[in-house]
Length: 397
Ligand SMILES: Cc1cc2nc3c(=O)[nH]c(=O)nc-3n(C[C@H](O)[C@H](O)[C@H](O)COP(=O)(O)O)c2cc1C
Image: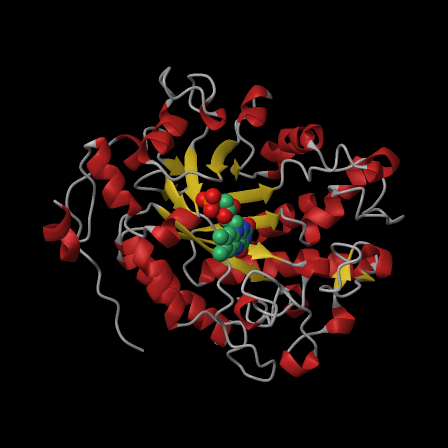
């Protein structure tokens, strides 16, 4: 394994590209408020018999390290499964192998080391895909690059071990669609194992050098499936009432908090609504909607969650939890106004409505795929100096 060269830094930045207070989240100081949101790349070894299954590779060093070298404050590593059957596809990143000698641990440490060497911080999103698991990586799909198809054992899948809060054909993701496997219902003991798995993976992540943990409870994956009364039809203590449905998220947060140092920030990603309010099913069961998210958000301080993507709702509820804005942020001015407050001209856009800052940080995904040097370009546009790696200075300053 090669050694990691630490890029010397130049000048400091201001505004969106630095952090007015809070510059620190717990013990982690970020040099700016621009964060790369987690993005699955389906780029790990998929052979279940290989020790390298699920381990991050040189691809991830180049891909994620590039954002770090080009000035972002925080890079959040893609959804990484806490259990093997929690992968969306056999090619997903995972962190379920025990101990610090595993390939998954070593792969993660290399990525974390490189990101640190470029002056950025690194987080990891811990996840379980639930009933959306065991699909073929998008580019392997015969149906075109945007679809998934079921992954069976011949391609490293686990059809009989796709799980959810509730099981059976009626709980297939996207009912009527042939692309997903029917889940089986997790037993109560298995739910407890999932909770413990999040804690174990978080501990390993921090040991490998990762600075912060994000819990993935969004986008219809396992924790979201528990939150929603549409997908969670359980009758044990993890189903039924709102209190029961959010229990798994509370326990996952507690397990992670117990496993990591007190100075480690904890982020939570949820879907503010699953957009079923107008659907017939919501009339029967209810759905996970904005009021549900606000109720959950109110509990976050006691869960010691530090940052949530829910924008105005949390601020309105008077919470101390930090807020990260994500989705369709592409322009430097928009990003600055989200964290610094908007002027009148920009306040017409929904994300910027009003003049107050709407979030404490911006998380961006696709724009970094299009424009990895977004921070450099934003600094130029906003006319603020930034801290750049020495190797790039002649092209930037
Ligand atoms: C290729 C790709 C992979 C993604 N993978 C994840 C993921 O692993 N976890 C997650 O929570 N969101 C994932 N997302 C969603 C992004 O994090 C982000 O929320 C979304 O793309 C909206 O932000 P954007 O408009 O800046 O792209 C992914 C998005 C893309 C485009």
